Length: 153
Image (tube, rainbow, N blue to C red):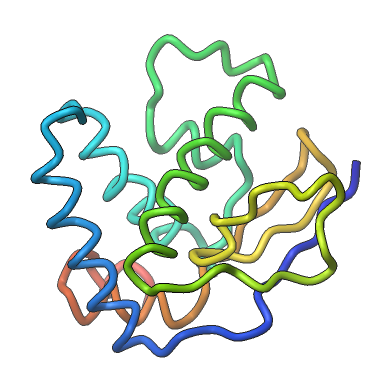
């Protein structure tokens, strides 16, 4: 199945910065989340940011995030794990930004596209799905000091 989703209206880097900080603060206060779950949020952002052009496939992100017990030869499992992490992060961002991603084209079966608040997505599911971090998200991460800009210069 070919995927290609992009958000129509993208919030400013300033709004993303505030939303990222709010989402992070809320996540840290959530007693139901493990330290691994909390860390994976920042790890996912860093893994995508540190990728060339802020762009990576599900498999590349999974490798950078080191999911441990994941069978990396199972492309569907890898894609589902990364999509799950992207969806969780996207949902946090949507709440903090008070938006519902308006993606195009409209997904079939009303697929949850909260991850579109972080990155555009396109490719052949599940083997070659590529996420590209939105420029305003990358800028917000830099402003917050959550990433090192020297690696991407």
